[in-house]
Length: 515
Image 1 (cartoon, rainbow, N blue to C red):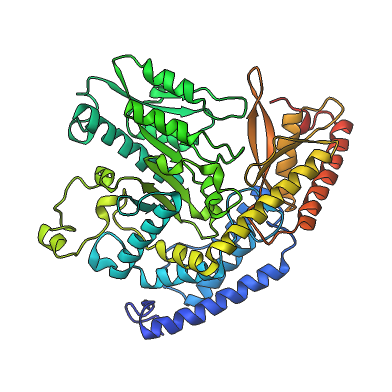
Image 2: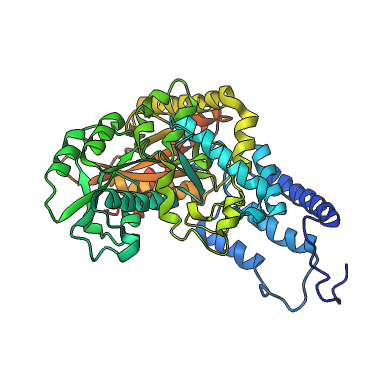
């Protein structure tokens, strides 16, 4: 291939020559990944943000769009190597910060196939089999949560935040349409006689607040329902708030947490479903993380009542070992997706084509062009099967319980709570009058800067007001052993002791700062 002919560097991936080129390029890329993997000593390269910026500055020299293109293998290597060197190794036992499980090999291969074939789901002629696979996957996942697949439907989305936005859109449109006959998409919210409001518990995911804002409902119309001492929404309080709403307000949605990312909280779904039905309110269950319990015979009882929700958010790139994005929004009634299909006849959906079966999915999603994410999810679930999936979930849960027991036995550590799922909250308790919140924040940053471990942080509300900083371990790698987990905690304790001694010798260090 020469560079002096127009378009000579363009090689379509799906042609016979292109497929052979992809094979060679992938092999070269995999060689680089294996070299980088063999040289790793921790879950991330040491150096922190400054180190990552320096690596990027070295790798990203020259223009994005040079006048003359380059050799594909050379360009690929120049970017893949630093990308891999500074990528988080989510297979490492000390990569415990975020909900990024190591995806299966078959899922990664399916991602490559999806990229090469580049199907889309908005029109039949953009991906005939991809469309059928998407519909089939939605029906099977609807069965998993307990829906009747003949009545249910759903959509694959980029993530739980988009799923929650779609759910709030359907809740607004469906509830207002059923109770007032007025659809916001016709005249907006201004002509309505009542202000729509959404109810949710404390600790609901921030994407619900964002959705309420984007839909024009206003932050002040997101009403917080009190929770009990375990953080679960109190059904009687939700019932009271709904019953006492003034005439100028109308509730369109009650949002329940079905496995919070910190404490694993599951709100009382059966009771909330009964309340929502009685008041004519849409019940949405955010099970983005918690839905992983459905795969485990031991844990699935936590989600009893999930099938009573009008919509459910599920992220299989959190607890399903599929690469991002593998998110799903499921709805109990397929017709509620009409919020996204307001124009039945467009250039993508002519009536005569629709009658003949040439139907795309542009009317069931916020997105028009949409990649075929169902492929990687389907091959992952079919390859693993229910028995292995259940065992993997249970292994991660057992790891979390092991970590919790180990932390509870350490005199210098405090356990936040027993983990219902796979998140473990804890903090180190420094002496010498050092500020505990500041110390734990600094401890987390130093472990990452030195490349020792990747751990998350959050806040736990205190009785009487305020909150405390807690560190978080997220166990989503069933290949991790208890010995490896103990080693991570041992190293964390050693580093904390070093930092504590340093801080006590130099009391002006960051760890003594307040707040």
